Length: 88
Picture 1 (cartoon, rainbow, N blue to C red):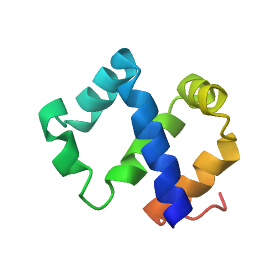
Picture 2: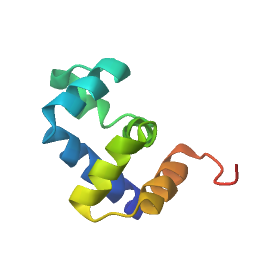
Picture 3: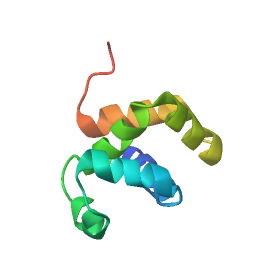
Picture 4: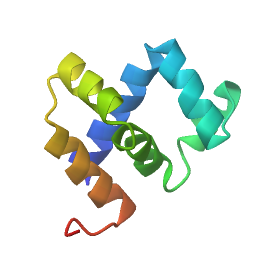
């Protein structure tokens, strides 16, 4: 689970450096930038960050290219944090 959390935090840090994507994430999640630190403590927040990334393949691929992370790593992290089954 720690690896999954590390992956989600890496995505969040990357989003923080991408103002347009961060704005989109905040709008879709309903979180205000000023409340993001508190929201990050809530169960499901990190899974939501990964879900945001996975719901838009170009964004996922941009993160993977920028961070050297494999898409499968993001998928595994999402499943670990969300409790979703990997078999689909």
